[in-house]
Length: 297
Ligand code: GUN
Image (cartoon, rainbow, N blue to C red):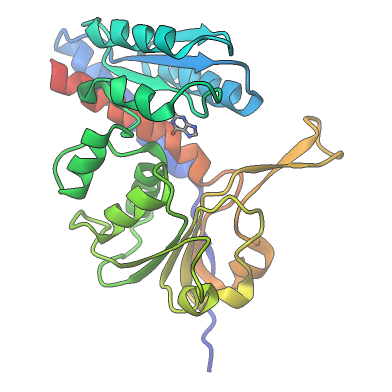
């Protein structure tokens, strides 16, 4: 006999506003102690539309929270060596606390080399192998913004995780992999039993039907449908695919990996898209940048 539960929305606007307010207060506390504002340096190579939007929003949030920010815009034809030199200069600049190079990069530049050139103490994206290794070992580390934002969201809405079965769909370095590590860690809002699914998983629906918590991070709009979800599951949608939509001013709509209409009635908690996880990521980046500044001072 299925039981019916009232679905509750994990509203990213509410949760991210709370995080930003907390960070802004901590920046003021630093100022009162005579410590400098945290300084985030962002590098944008080329003019990809989505990347432009993300970087602009990161810079704007820096202003709102009292951070210092520097945006370095480089032409899409910039060669790898030049980009690495810019990163090195930011590594050596004692005023800069955090460095991020917006991904994806043009094909002729190695993302791995770029990530490894950022000094681990300034790696506020948490992509450097040192950061990933520290995260895996449960040491203090920078946590990549999307999984960190999801952990902050679970905390904000006080969603119990201990002993739950979490199914993470996707194994990317940016989301799925670190998410699976965090959910299985001993952190508050960890302690889950985690199954990581990906494009080669044979019996995906069988697994998602067993999940108390599902994190959908595969980048396929509307992939997770109601028939794949257990009654009462917590559903977290990481998808942000731009789908052409002539009725929108910009000509596209942002679609999540979850078919909200069929999944929401079965879930206990669900994140909307837009207005969910996406809004949390910048707050998480600001938390990392503040932490970087705190460690340096
Ligand atoms: N591209 C998509 N997500 C991210 C992110 O979290 N950081 C950076 N640097 N690039 C991205």
